[in-house]
Image 1 (cartoon, helix red, strand yellow):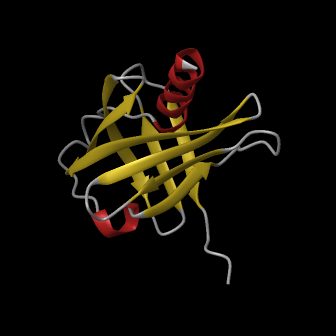
Image 2: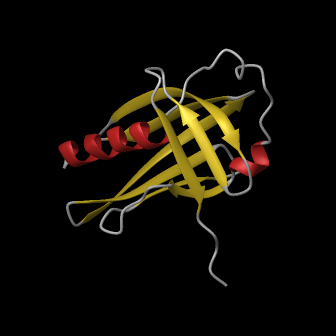
Length: 127
């Protein structure tokens, strides 16, 4: 079970990653646009990964790993364009700092500390 959770957290950091492009680090991001549910822009039908940011600084990652639903709770803090994330799984805490390159009502782009860029799209509420 811990291996599945660790894999899910790794998937999260690969999909929603981001740290510091020098021209973005001081840019102010509208925190209200971050709130809600997000999924990878290239999400495949057989994969499920949803990241939810709540207004109280809490976040949840829901994933389907090998037919098992996994939920990982964590916290986040937005400072300028830097998004600091702390996830709790298997009694361990995993921390990462992400830089948001683009954040609109429907899209979020990030870059991780290794330079990998990823895009997320907002999940619209069904009416």
